[in-house]
Image 1 (cartoon, helix red, strand yellow):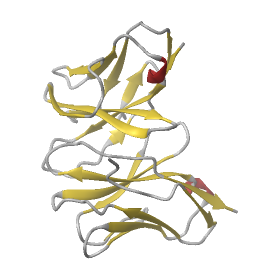
Image 2: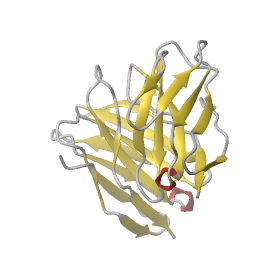
Image 3: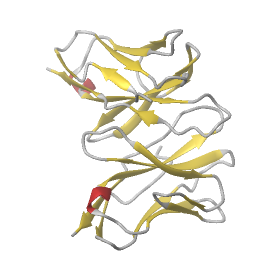
Image 4: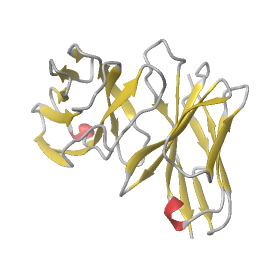
Length: 110
Length: 114
């Protein structure tokens, strides 16, 4: 059973904010939300993670709802290089077992 | 710091054969995880090794196995290859539990089974 569900594809205009949603309605209390992205033919790259508070780093912001059943990854100013498949995934604090699913293919349009 | 390396990058085998893939983690990383990526199933977790012990295992048949050496390098083996085993096999390394577990992925090994 999928632990996370994401829309299969999204478009975003260059320079605009890209908001990528993720549902994880069965998330457990000890599971972290992680986001990775994969650019064609490369291994996935870590973006950001969080437990229950909103997080921000140099790449993106992560908004987690209060009930933790969904989250949104925000790329504040999308560039063409942000075109990739974005994975929302969960990890428990008892091991490095990530459930990636099929992700969202984001296309940034000039 | 050198990244995660995987060898070989490309491999072609025939049904029934077996294959061994290798992964060298980032220096200091003791956890190594393996994933299978196919267009239909996405990225699926195979197993994780830590300190030479399998710590977590995904839902794959026993034909898929792995091991980790004392220097944290890891190998995975697939026996009796099937056409459906054609995939990109990714290895990821990370620090031990207790710290932020960002996984660093290698470039993958592209396996084609004919």
